[in-house]
Amino acid sequence: MENFFTVSALLGALGIFFLRVLDMSLDTLRVLFVMRGKNKLVWVLGFAQSLIFVVAITSVLSNLDNPLNLVGYAAGFATGNVVGMFIEGKLAVGFIHLTIVSSRRGNVLAEVLRDNGFPLTEIPARGRDGTVSVIYADIPRKEVKRVEKLIYEADPEAYITEEDVRPRRRSMWRA
Image (cartoon, rainbow, N blue to C red; front, side, top):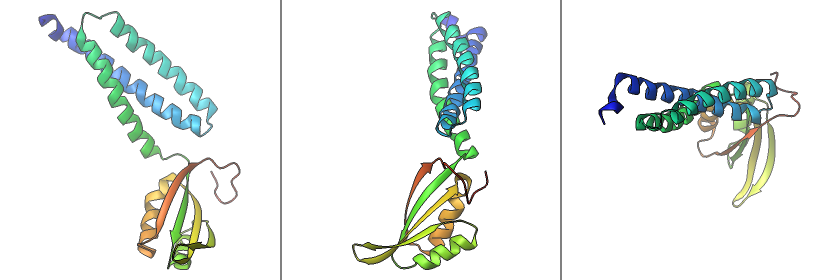
């Protein structure tokens, strides 16, 4: 049992942990860029990720007598997913399609968004209790929090849904 807690064994498990964190963070980013159609970047990330994975799994399989390596591998996998999600959130690559429904302040809401530089389409519609405004806006993901704040300041009762989108042709946004 004391063989598990040598400096060498602990460093080996820690190394495997960090390799898996890096591997899974790259995996999360690779999937993001697959969805965005970034072929060259996906290739580079996939290549690096597979190299790191092979080194990590080889380290575990060649030292199965040290259970700390298994713990490092599993903990690195789990942590890498969270780290990858964090990085992806900070990068905020791409666009979000917002659908905003306003029962009373649609015109004001559309004006506020336009005044802040966001292109949108406003459509009159009919809801359960009468006429509503439906606003469609495709915005950069980096702007979602700001737009959400503008929406709720203009209409605290607005209903918002969002979807990830990949524009086919950009006319309003320069990217």
